[in-house]
Length: 102
Image 1 (spheres, helix red, strand yellow):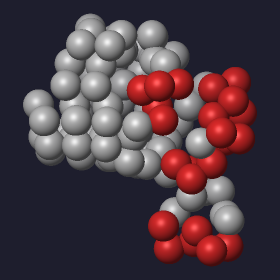
Image 2: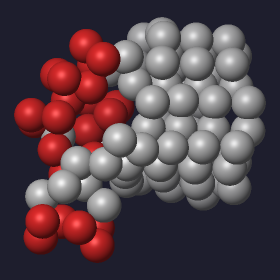
Image 3: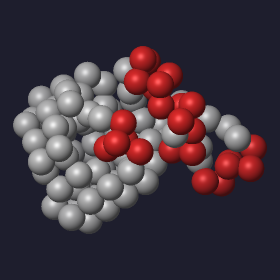
Image 4: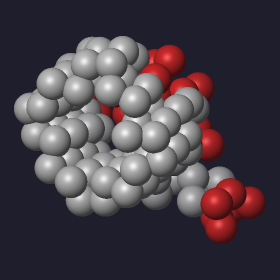
């Protein structure tokens, strides 16, 4: 599914182990409770995606996505990520203002 258009797709609870979403547009996709073990998310657009309670989602995977702007994450994960991966949460047009978007 490299560079696939998966906007607003509902993957709730899906087993996506080792799926390849490299460069995929997953804007507003629902990945709640999905198994993301070994899933390739490099350059994936996860703007507005729901990643709450996703299983086996690593910092390495998250660090390679295109954006997490507006993504729904567990609070603990968000707090951990915003320090080291701040740029993933900043809208490109607001990057000069350092504004984190919800």
